[in-house]
Length: 559
Image 1: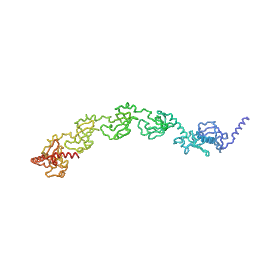
Image 2 (image 1 turned 90 degrees about the vertical axis):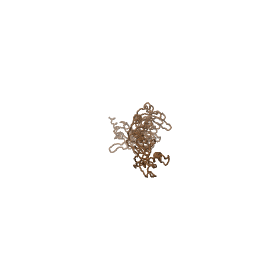
Image 3 (image 1 turned 180 degrees about the vertical axis):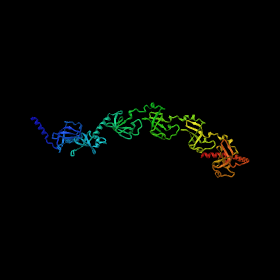
Image 4 (image 1 turned 45 degrees about the vertical axis):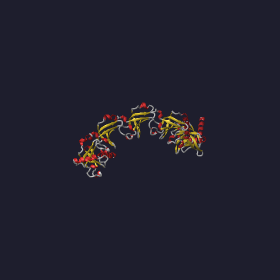
């Protein structure tokens, strides 16, 4: 009983020991709560230590002995205020100074985020600026709270008892060590894991765990890429192939497409000539369209291979980027990685059937599609035109421009004259629909006939008069009046109705001479006038009809 009483007395004496503010004592953890730990320091009352003062609160267990600093012996409620961090700070300050002087490292747990950086518990409360947290300043400092890291002490102020840390220096040193190791062991052809660090217009920088490599856009895919973002994103993990290493400049070239076979290696067997392929238009240029038929394989449809019959000025008139289409393989050059494609080959060439469909002599009908200085184009069918030359528009009239006979949009009939497949031309004529009136000119007109017509053209030497059967006759200026006529325009104008007598027919040169003044002549007067005309020598004052016709022909051919 005496021993028990003595033991109890000793215990009371122990709990009666004097506890002073600022004193560091050892305490035993007797209870672990959600946000704090209850510590027995041998006094009348237990003290409480906050959970955030422990580096790893989850590892704390009952019975652990810790050093704590008494911040306040007892409050009005009899509670003792303890601090594990301040006890450690007091105990560790000399150690921290030594570490700082030696440039050493410490382990610390990030307690929280403050303006400009992180608060870190390293036994004392320290500060790590945001610029020193990592190689690249982090966007979210909150992600570091609660985690433990290695830090280097870079500044220590004994007077203020504050410490500045840097994690970046350790990270850089570690990266440098890894980079040196990677450069020494890496060889072209290696496949390495990496993370996309940054994207640019020309490629992507890949972090190979300490060493950055460049993945150029041309080495990302065998197919066409406009920008790396079409295939990659920052933070993405991927396997890349080492293509080239420059150890002096610490540069590494990487490839992604090299993990797959080059699609051009077996291109001839995959796309034999004449094969129909499907693809998408990826680019349009003035001379053609590039079509992707599989990633990394593009073919060119030249502008001349778009249609058999239409003259297409530029591919953008009929195609657009992104359009799906079919084409036929026309040629392959594996060395230059070129494929020639054609679209028109999907249809039958209408010129292959033109000889059978439009043999010479066939009558056709269609709209005038276009006019040129030398003729008119008539549409025979979709994409197939026939050309009517001005010389094949009339048997009798000299046509200087097709607009004198037809206009765009007119529906006309014609006869096929010739099919030229090599030059893709079909010649047709309008005058061939009727008989040449000069073949029967004797039945239509005779010398001495009195005829009527309208003045169609004026020239310095006379006037042309339109006669029946679409034939023109010439009234020389000397045959207009008995009186001398200096200028034909003084007595006649286009559109005037005139009556004249046929005084000459030249079938070989397809010419008819008329005389207005002889319209009312007697037979004797006609003979006399004819004798005068026949007696004139060539070249005399353009009186002879052959000179008049020659001059007329020359003048209007120049016009």
